[in-house]
Length: 211
Ligand code: TMP
Image (cartoon, rainbow, N blue to C red; front, top):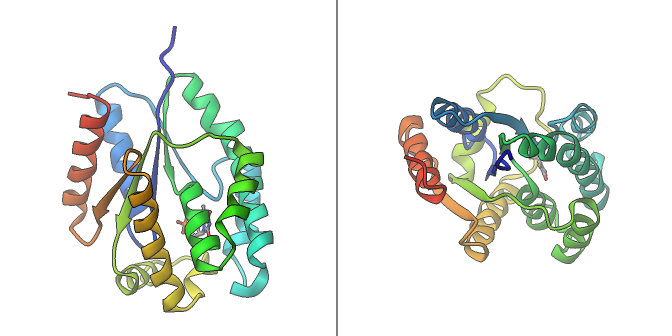
């Protein structure tokens, strides 16, 4: 019988290097014969990618925090059901650039929606489905925004929130990691790309007993 795959998420503020590190981890796993699916949120399935467009473009005030959270969980429910769970059932590891911790940070701590409301929406949308392991890439908010600003991307809606919003996010991710120490590992993302990748690989190899 196929052994079910694992689910690893990458979290952090803007410009922390999550997508690069997600790809690097997947390629390190594939070198050891572990098939991976690299995916992202919001998005990761055709329907969720449609919803992503509504979230990442336009004015910061386009949605209120509750509506935004409902859109995110509509996308997440579709992504989990159509991409992540089927991949894991086939023995693949799902490596995801952002997952539910981003909602607690951005819509909760950032935009002020209370935690209990996020938790209730989450329970309806995905039950108790959680990553096996989460890397929080930590970086001063101003440094991350500078990196993100250097990218030519039209997906700037969240980057436009003020610096205090982004500073609250950083603290929120650190608080999440503190509350879930078995699942989360904080990584210093101000180090160079190779150093960050090495720290992540070491943690994965030890957590999942890979040689
Ligand atoms: P990305 O820039 O990491 O691809 O993510 C797109 C934006 O979506 C990013 O600015 C953070 C935001 N976001 C939330 O606000 N809440 C969420 O739950 C997720 C997954 C992303």
